[in-house]
Amino acid sequence: MGQILSSRTNAVLTLELSNPGKANALDFAMLAALDEHIAQIGEDDTIRAVVLRGTAGGAFSSGADIREWSALDPQAFATQWIGEGNAVFRRFERLRCPTVAVIEGLCFGGGLELALCCDLRLAGAGARLRFPEVAIGAIPGWEGGDRLQRIAGRGRALEAVLLSREIDPTTALQWGVVNAVCAPQDIETQLQEWTTRLCAISPRAAALAKSLIVDDDKDPHAAYPAAALAVRISPDAELGIRAFFAKTSAIF
Image (cartoon, rainbow, N blue to C red; front, side):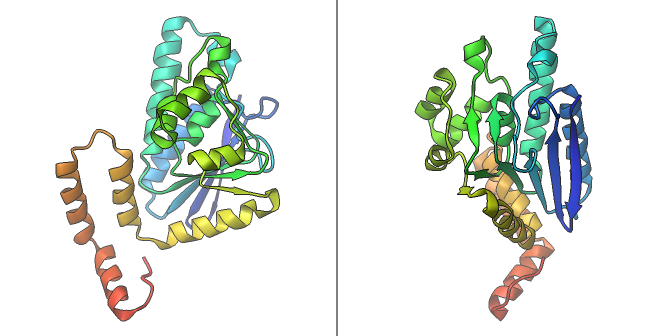
């Protein structure tokens, strides 16, 4: 049974996928643990950024635990594993604070689907991204193909899914699937730079700006004026405007 280990440094919460012996394959226990963390983050405004990673220097996740889901009857698989899993992934994708996936090794199947729920992705030079599902008579059921399509385009998403193509870090960067690729020794430095920046920006503005990008169901005619009003009447706007005219950096 896997687990998600958590640690915190100042305003940054790190969640580590941990399922030793299975390359951090995702199981029901890990989905439940992720959902618990989502709820806790929602109640703690002092968390300004979330880092999701696998074993340091090793696998992010080899995918969904096939021994777990293959034991389910088809209806339970569809409703519990896929339906409930997607609900957790959507809640994670829509967290108010920015999220960063650190991908250093294997990132296959459901693991890649989870990484695609993050706002930013940092890959190590040894990262390996792939959707292998169709080769075993399955599909990327946690909406990974659709998320990849929105990032990289339909043609590339179909190529990745139908050919089970492994996407190397260079290609992932060209496709926009990852935001940066680092040598192993540089990953922590790059991650620190990102999280420092994410913790310095306005948390209210970040949450609203993110929601306008992530929420595909919004009515843009209503959503943008509402978000603009919400941030404009917030204390963050006053701080930012004062800092701008004072030619200083706002401290949120």
